[in-house]
Length: 128
Image (tube, rainbow, N blue to C red; front, side, top):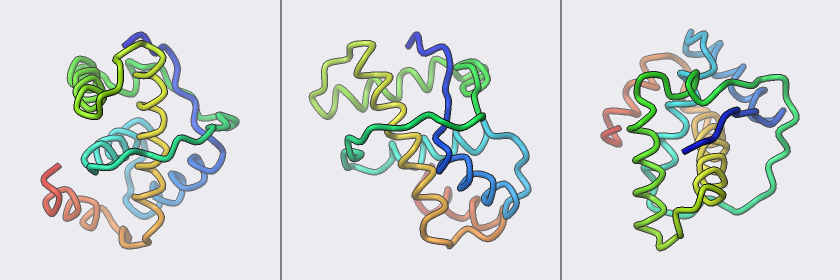
């Protein structure tokens, strides 16, 4: 994927700020990786909404993916193929962003993550 920059919505930034405080994870990109993986693990389509990338939280694709860039690329490509979505650059970027925003909402919306242990237990439960 040639996505160069990822900018979060203000809502996502606020949610991640709270999650940072609860888990002690200091880096946006680490929490975003968790969120993306949690969302893509769901066997449903994320709601096709317009994402207002209006926060000051921005990271490069490499900052998000790091040395695992090819794995994250493969995850979104395979997800699109499984859903019958053409793997154009536009679709890959769109669904990546939708999964990221949905994952952030999932991780923060239920208020079941109150500590790093809760986040780790979630990963064990859903086999992330």
